[in-house]
Length: 106
Image (cartoon, rainbow, N blue to C red; front, side, top):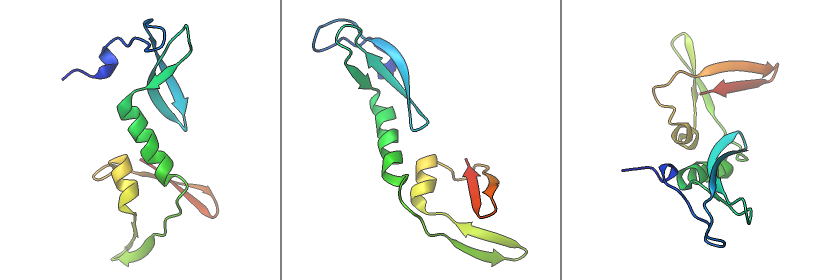
């Protein structure tokens, strides 16, 4: 099945062909179309869903558990984070931002 991004989109207001553009919002690249004449924009539906998922979890505060297993410490991350990043079975980079903040990069 072809992706909608591969198709041409015509503006419903002025019936002109919309150009494909890439917008950036909250560090997301949104594939979008913009009508040059009336300046109306449409986001790719799949990109819009991912952005909405991010906006739903970004301001939540998650409580995680740290426990010891043998000589290692294990941090349990909430499923919402793992599902959002499809992070299961992927390497994660841990980095201290300052003395009391730890940053995870998927």
